[in-house]
Amino acid sequence: MAVLPVNPTRMELTRLKRRLVTARRGHKLLKDKRDELMRQFLDTVRETKQLRRSVEARITDANQHMSVARSLMQNEALAVAMMYHKQEMKLAVTERNIMGVRVPVFATETRTADANDIFSYGFAFTSSDLDDAILSLSGILPDMLRLAELEKSCQLMSAEIEKTRRRVNALEHFMIPRYEETIRYITMKLAENERGSITRLMKVKDMIVEKAVEGRKAEVLEE
Image (cartoon, rainbow, N blue to C red; front, side, top):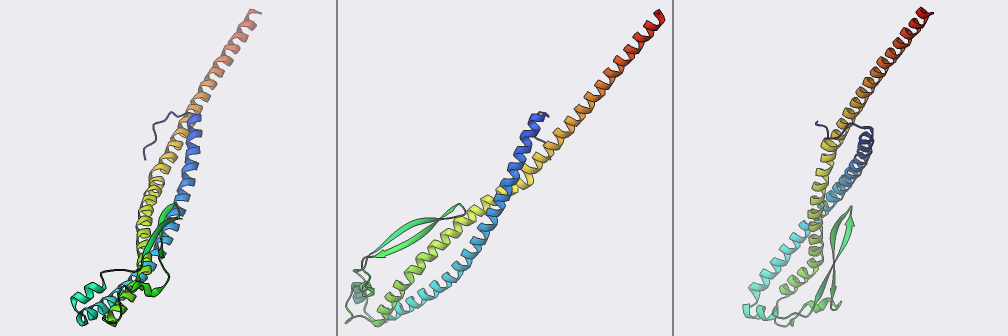
């Protein structure tokens, strides 16, 4: 692992040690975030899978009722029955936060709470299977919205998990080892410089002592 291009000084060593502490703390927080996001993601995927099976089965049932209604009613009568609508629905979209990921929350509000307001036709000239098909589709709608909410949440969480995973790997396999290698390099350089300084001081001391001894000898000879 290559070291960072820095000057091997004590100030730089202190700065890098602080960065290493911050990087390790960030690595732990990101790992915790990744693990919690993965747990939430798997729970959401399981719920999505079950709900999708239920919605698909109910849509199949509604299509069967509609097919029977088409076979029993004339095309013109069916077109007239489905031409107008009585009920209105408003969709409100809000958000909730899951470990920093803002996922959508859908809420619906109908114009009236009367369940019979979904039928825009009279019952005298229509098939009961058409009623069953419309009732089935009306009942599926909340689950379809919930399914859309869950699938979008899965998409957003998977993108965030991938982004967090890349950050964790960058810290774990690149940044932290590089900081550690650079700190070792600076520590060795400082120790080497210190040993060199001690060696020079010892030589200077020996020279001073030797000079003092020679001076003392000269004084003794003069006496």
